[in-house]
Length: 372
Ligand SMILES: Cc1cc2nc3c(=O)[nH]c(=O)nc-3n(C[C@H](O)[C@H](O)[C@H](O)COP(=O)(O)O)c2cc1C
Image (tube, rainbow, N blue to C red; front, side, top):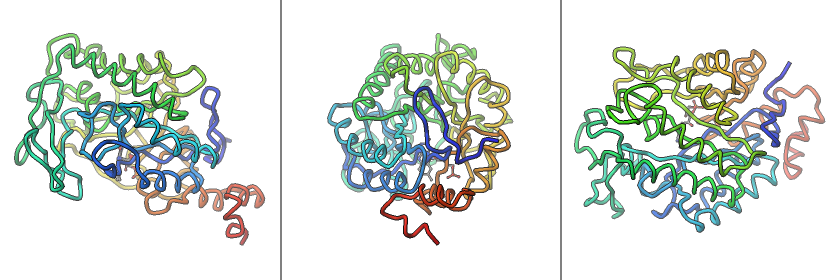
């Protein structure tokens, strides 16, 4: 029976185990999207901590795609060069480095969460003097009613759409130069690609709005562009929101997610990472252990693609049960990896039956601590 410590084969790559660091924004660049010491230590620690896959935070494919002025970016060769030592370190620790490629759409141009997270207008600045910008949206009135100012917004025209696809393609090429092994396309949480998917935020009447086929067109074109430049021996993931959690209206739901997951498989996607929500403040969602796992499980059962589950996983035994019971191929862990950067080593200690193998999961430098 496959367990969470079993390797996961992804094309010609193999993750040492099925525990991944879920992408988590750090808002820690110095305004220009370049990786800093913070990113090196933050991601490096989790690689030391035994994660099979270490995924970066949402990394903007163009400057307007950042949530805040401090988000990580990958829109120039300089950005790739800043990330390269990080991917090298992760690989040296036996982890697979992944990059989450993102465009924040109409959720862009905001202050950092711990500074209010309110929109910064293009002519305004945040508390540190960083300027805002006009945000991109599928529809002129897409963002749900807002307390306070809504960001200055532009409905994406054909040129914008082509620009976004090209930005993803170029970002994937640069990610390759930076040494990443996995490219994950962020199509969840109410950001640009999800905004196109959901009829709540997509009211377009052209080829990119209306039917399922049209609403999914942009993400399918982005996936195709990334897959075109991403080598055949390296995996591509897509993160989706399995549902908008808006049952009271026409919205994005699990049935559409299953259908899209099959389309992704046809386009060469290797794993669908199933999160949820993030689109609308009226979402009816409850947290708690495994809160999104039933969505991942349904995609895994009904679509022909590997699936990652995420949300409310805090214990090694819990992660192990998800894999053993066939509910997920990969378990992504977010906040618990912030509380415990060595969650992967804890899993090896708790779950590995062979004491030598458990000790060997630890870096040699730390092994004396493993031999209790
Ligand atoms: C600080 C923080 C930042 C996050 N940033 C991202 C992100 O950049 N991209 C993303 O897809 N999800 C992001 N998330 C969501 C996590 O990846 C994860 O899906 C969520 O926290 C649920 O998993 P958990 O219960 O294990 O934390 C973030 C979550 C946290 C706590």
